[in-house]
Amino acid sequence: MKLYSLELEQSVIGSILIDPDLLPDIQTSLPPESFYSVPERVAYTTIASLAQKGSQIDFLTVSDELEKSHPGHGWLQYLATVAKNTPSTANVLSYADAIRQYHYLRRVYHAGEEVCRSVMVDGALSEKIAAAQQAVGRVMELEAGKGPRDSVSIIRDWMDHLEAVQQADGVSGLSSGMTGLDDLTHGMKPGELHILAARPGQGKTVLALQVAYHAAMQGQSVLIFSLEMQARELMSRLASTATGTYYRNIQTGDLCADQWQSITGFVEKITKQRLYIDDRASLSIEEIRSVSRSHRNRHGVDLVIIDYLQLASGDGESDVVRVGNVSKGCKMMAKELNCPVLALSQFSRGVEQRADGRPKLSDLRSSGQIEQDADVVMMLHRADDASTELIVEKNRHGRTGSVWLQPQFDRMRFSPGMPPISLDEPAPPKKRLRY
Image (tube, one colour):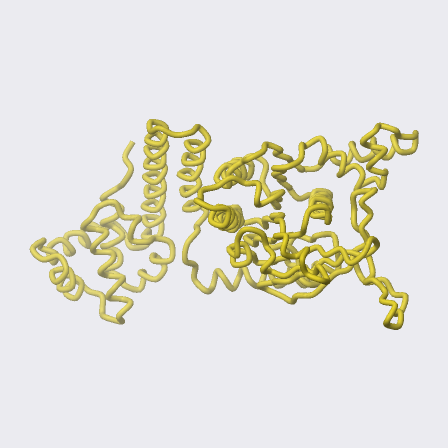
């Protein structure tokens, strides 16, 4: 099968020479690299360069410029012949579209070659699969039209986005299910990396699963990578979260008839949702990205959750470098999949040595790279047994602040809460903060 058409490429050049006003419409969808034949690619690039300078486009100006950059090719005769053989300028956009399709086919062909080469070299199977998916992913991005866009198309998308935000009461991304948090972040938006950090036992996984369950019940496709807990344990926690059944009873199987009925209802609901869990330990960030790409192609993906960053394997001679690479991989994955990524992270022990125990961004364990990559950094701080402060310490696109939650770990969830009352200060009005 032919992977290019010289006639089509020459017809586009000829059409532009006959009617230079056609160039802007052609340039919108046809970059120079779409041309297979070198003379046609050079001619197209030269014409575009002249247009950018505001120069006149005709046979003499184009041939003169070509002779300066690529002398000795008889460019004036070439241009005259190309224009003479052009069937019709009316079909030039169809010609451009066909050239672009040939370009896609060549990219597919080269991706196949790249996959074959990766199979033949030494390396782990997971690395070869990841390389193959990356090669195919680059072709898919090309087909999806990734790259520079003109202001008209961007404004159109932005206006649609603005209308959607207005209708959603200011939540432009995926809702966390917590109104107070959504007020600060406006939801988890595609391409964003959200970090949820805390010391062990503060409720990172509880809160992440609560967000996952809410998203799944809203019809979103949620993919969870649990590097620490088994899928069965996560499902037990989800059942407790959703039904309010004591987690202890679910663990022991000591359930009354009403609790069994609640569990049965939960099973009926959750099995109809698109909630997926990968509980393999020690996955590398490249493996996580590879699995996520494959999952997106088969099931779609609206939210990826990683529990937790420090357990993902990666390259680096130290924990700082390794975790930094994992963090960068998470951000790249969010942009590549065009969905939010919620990654859990641990704090260093330095937070425990502070008098008030209140965390700071500098407490993010192993790497300051996490702070740099994250769009939103949230921190859990247990003020007392009845009050947990969810601190939004960094928000690239909005306000920072705190949301108070009431931990109910016996039922694996957080409820709306209030800040603790100090004995040295008057009690605040008895008004519950928004969840």
